[in-house]
Every structure is written in structure tokens, then in C-alpha cells.
Length: 283
Image (cartoon, rainbow, N blue to C red; front, side, top):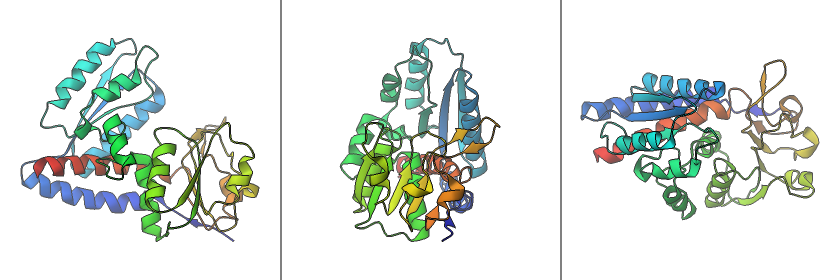
């Protein structure tokens, strides 16, 4: 068996073309979707992520603001800027690029963002709404994964879904979305015993644990759909996911590559959330 490649770049282009049209329609009514991104410090990976987000906004016809601070900035200064953005009618989405320097309380900063502008979906109010099945915003990476399933026509009802990783950013919201789609969900983590026992019964396997090529072919049920959320840099500088792509592709029915899979969809769904926030604001 050779797996179908779930192409994140192609799906992202399709969705972003629609977002651009919707943004133009909204701008004609006097509202241009606006995103503010706050970057604290000089982490190279974070700088790349922020640049990609700003560029994506420009291509979709959104207004964007990149706000940068040195790594030793006082948290009170950043909190004050967030308060200003909360009150700025030109800004419909606010995100703080993680990770933050050690002297920051990440939870406090995320809590300071107005829930209606929390396009990452990390505010406790938005997490609670997702749990209840009525999300204002869906966290971008799980949102992108659900778009893969929809695009590929993958029916999740009654399927066994196994998630590797229990983070607030991917694992937990992914579990909520899969349960709401009527899948039976298991979350595995560092303390899970006999991990392969769980992964081998999965119809849907989502790997989000941050370990290069950790998921091998013998851990995957033949015909499973494998979603690789991991992004790991190898010693030679190349990127790879949490899944041994070459080997697992011979077992799975469908798989996302790294790069070019979930990554482009994460930024795409950030645009989706920002656009949806602007459309709500415009009525």
C-alpha cells in the first residue's frame, strides 16, 4: 500500500483564495481584517513563524501589525500594548508568539487578550466554549487537521482516533474536535504504557509529541490515516516530522508530509479565525 499524500500547501492555496475574496468583500463594506502579532525576544524559529504570518496576511488582503520587543522587556509593557490592541477597532485578532522568555507568565498574557480577538483560541473562555461544542475560535493546528479530513472526505464517525501528545495547543483541542465528530478518542502521553498497543488500533493517528521520526511503520495499523503535526530539525538542517514518513507511507492509507502538510494549514486557519472575527464585528 502507498499512502495518499494529504497536501497542505495545495489545500492552503485553495482556502486562502476564498479568504482573499471574502476579505475584499468585507473591505468594500468598510472593514479590513486586521491581525496583530506580538514577538518577544529573538528566537530564530519564532521570527520565521511571525514573518510567515505577516506575509500570509498581506497576500490575503489583511491588515497586519508586527510588534517586537527585546527579550528583557518588562511584562507590564507588553500587557499594556495588548490592552491597547483590545480597544483598537482596526485589529480583529491578537496573538502572542510562543515561547516567551522565562520571566513571563504565559497564561497571564494569553488571558489578557480579549476573548473575541483571541484568534489562537487559547483564552480560557474560548477553551471552555470549545469543550461545550460551541467554539468561538478553534485552535489553528487542530482546525487545519479537521480541514484535511473534510477535504479528503474522511468519515470520522465511530473511528478509533489516537492522539500522541496532550498539549493545550494541539492534543487536547484535537481530542475535543474528534469527539465532536463522533470518533472514539484516546490520548497518549509520556506516561502511557505500551504505546504501540494503542497506536496499532488507530484508524486515525495524530502525532504531536515533538520527537523526530518516533512513529515507525510497525506502530501503525494498515490503512490508517496518519497526521504528522511534529516539526523537528535534524543535524543536517533538514526538517522532519514525528513520523517515519517513508516507512509509514507504505502502511497508511493517507498521510501528511513534513514540511508541506500541517504547517501551511496552521497559518491558513489563523487567517480563517481572523477573518471570522472581522466578519462578526462587521455583522
